[in-house]
Image (cartoon, rainbow, N blue to C red; front, side, top):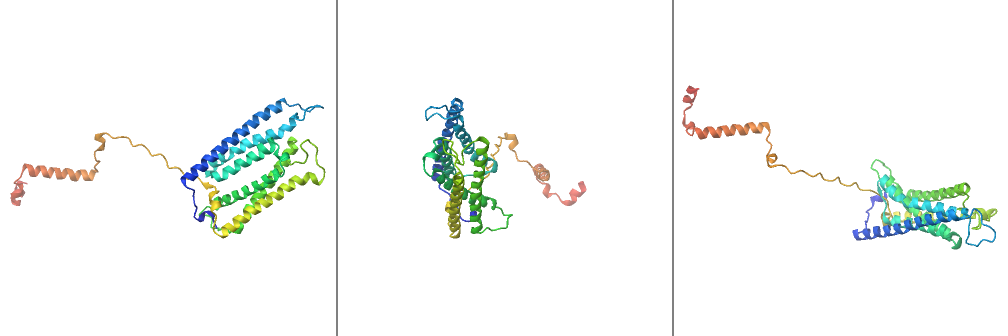
Length: 309
């Protein structure tokens, strides 16, 4: 089964324009926020002490405190520009309905989560973001498998169960890769992305140190399972409008520009005559001139003509 074999209901031009305008506003707001965070946190790192002296105010933090914020802000700026690179290099079109949640997620995860310390101050903020990201990745998986299976040379028709299973495995795999990324950079840069210690730097002991990582994986599984089941039953009922509206599509090739035809001179506009046609026209012209010069030639007997010859 191919998702794009069903009738796609594209939004109206007005609705499409409104979505694109909203996406541009969201992108501008988030990218300005990210760059402002990079600049401000860079200044704080340059001015912060290596170690906080005793008796310092609570708002004074060491350089290591701002390292994760700065790293995440730089990563956010890079991720904000990834969709445009993907569209350009892979020749696909990402709908606004997919870009807007992606940009909002980056804002909530990086600026609010790390820079504004929502991970520590807002209960279950990390859980909400992992569930949301798993749903986005599951939805993205439906588009990916539709594009990969969109070929007349591939004779396979995929069942709804297989597509849903792929979406589930894709989302969970991405969540696992993210945990590997957090574990790696926590060890290399001394960060606390896996939240194995408190905001003040006091490490957890035993099972408590694994609680954040395992909770994230469990939430990823739940979010991926929910989207996969929803997609499965939607395909069984032949109602995939939500997938069509969020589906990545191959970019339509643009028509080549029309070459401007230069104006021809009056002499160049004359009809070109082929050589056989020119010979026929010349013969007809000679015959007309002969009749004009000898109007009584038709009355001459054939014997006289032969005699003259």
